View 1: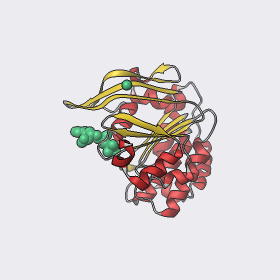
View 2 (view 1 turned 90 degrees about the horizontal axis):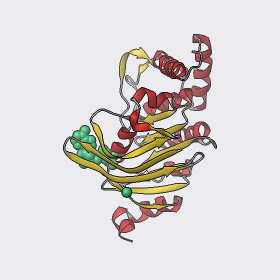
View 3 (view 1 turned 120 degrees about the vertical axis):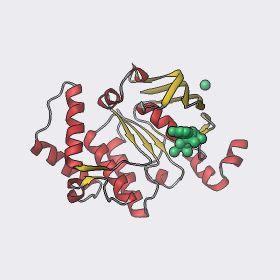
Length: 248
Ligand code: ADP
Ligand code: MG
Ligand code: MG
């Protein structure tokens, strides 16, 4: 579904990703773990097409299409969803307005009919209920005054509403308390654990992976995948730390 080959990226003059290879098949959930500054967020930005994250070599194929050749909005319309480590606030626009606009522009790009206000609200309510987020939160301005946990939960509702084929979730679990972590984990499973979907979870901690059990765990270090294993690798990292596991 997603095939990354020999990906190299530069931020300014500095090379960050240095030949990263990764393949995610439909129906699989992969976790990427790695020390601070390894290039995890850079990978998610490069996949999203964020300006300033220049791909200097390699290829990324998404369902047979050249992802790197697509504009960010085309990537989203093709079914790629990115959850960010630091969600942005958008004063003056409500979540409902923002998400209806986002969903309908993606539907338009795919040649589908837009949802009416009523249809959209029904869909949004179902997704909010799944993530136990009060509908009033969705009527508020995007992320303005939201706590860290509320932002992440709202982001998962956003994912449920857009119903992407592939999600890249960058530290979705950071700053969550135990209950929010479980709700977010169950939300990821409910929305994305499907035979025709794929997920890349970037995380520092093993605990989210107790709820969302990955098929593969990769260690990203200095711009490359240096080790791949099953869920046990995450447990081993938690117990031993990166240095020891990577040296083994
Ligand atoms: P991780 O998410 O694994 O902690 P990042 O991808 O955020 O790592 O960063 C990898 C490296 O790239 C770090 O050394 C970071 O300082 C650098 N970097 C990332 N983005 C920028 C940027 N916009 N400007 C300068 N350096 C950056
Ligand atoms: Mg390589
Ligand atoms: Mg990061």
